[in-house]
Amino acid sequence: MIKVTKPYIPNIKKYQSLVEHILKSGQLTNDGPFCVELEDRLKEFLGVRNVILVSNGTTALQSCYVALGLQGGVLTSPFSFVATASSIKWQGLEPHFIDIEEGSLNINPSLIKRNLNSSISAVVPVHVYGNPCSIEDIDKIAQEERIRVIYDAAHAFGVNYNGKSILRYGDASTLSFHATKLFHTMEGGAIVTENDDLAKAIREIKNFGIEDYEIKRLGVNFKMSEMHAAMGVCVLDDINLILEKREEIWSKYKTSLQGYLELQERLKGSSNNYSYFPCVFKNKREMQRVNDALENEKIFPRRYFSPSLDTVEALSGLKKRKTPVSRDISDRVLCLPIYPELALEDVDRIINIIKQSLLTV
Ligand SMILES: *Cc1c(COP(=O)(O)O)cnc(C)c1O
Image 1 (spheres, rainbow, N blue to C red):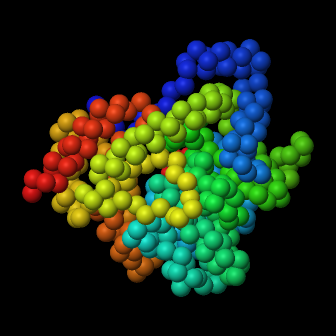
Image 2: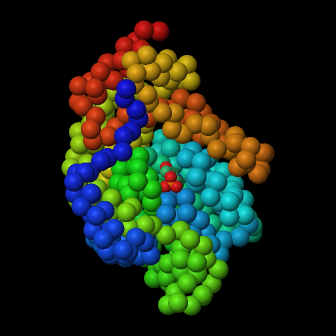
Image 3: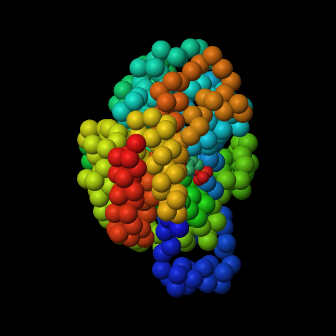
């Protein structure tokens, strides 16, 4: 059986020895040496100023909303994983969905400006599939209009724009280190920001509001444990290998499938982390036919991202606001299996099944 992704398992003996070290040391959590090491190494690897580890990518988003004091409405993309919008709603804010662009599949910057009003305090764009949003346009609008920008960069680990990390844009960017992501700590996440005051506020929030044994503000518990951080250290040791393997698979898909279906248009000047291989088919029927043909062979692509979040009752406040491009793409997109362990023969097999089912109408 081949699924869309498979968690990367580092050398088991190495991880075991770190776990043993942690257990013998007695420091299991509370910003222990593995959390400190992982933050330092991530800062260096990503080329960013502050990395704050938290319990997952969803609490990373929530920390930012609280630290930045968001109120009222928040503009965001309906073409994302549910956590982007549910984290907004969970914090008592109202997600307002803004449509995406047909090619980049990211939030349309011109619609941000058009949908601003006095109740909107922030925008949460998503670098979907690791393709950077129009970061310069978005940051410019946000500065002019005095709203905050928190990029959901859960897919964008290690992606650069003009040679520098895209995580340096906006007020902050959030990462998910869930087991299925490119880089992972089993469960985990981080906030990346160039703003030291914001970093300090988030550090307090994730630790009950406590700093230097004093309760400085209202906080919660969003901490990462040492076991999780140690997994991150092991996976980070292998990150170049992970990226190479993914690139190999991604390139094979691209060479073989371009012309047969629509591929995402990536931002000029940006690098790729090869975290997903999204395919946009002509229509829902064609997508379904390819999906069924693959499932027949025990290959399970995923309909990332379906449904379009503006159609989800629990999330959508403003029923009037329709996002037709997002709904349309959600109906005809599939993400193909891509992970380091996936054999190139299996990639060939997947490509052939797709081509076959596109040709037999
Ligand atoms: C995975 C993901 C999240 C949530 O991350 P968790 O670590 O699972 O909480 C948020 N946004 C996007 C776009 C994601 O893909």
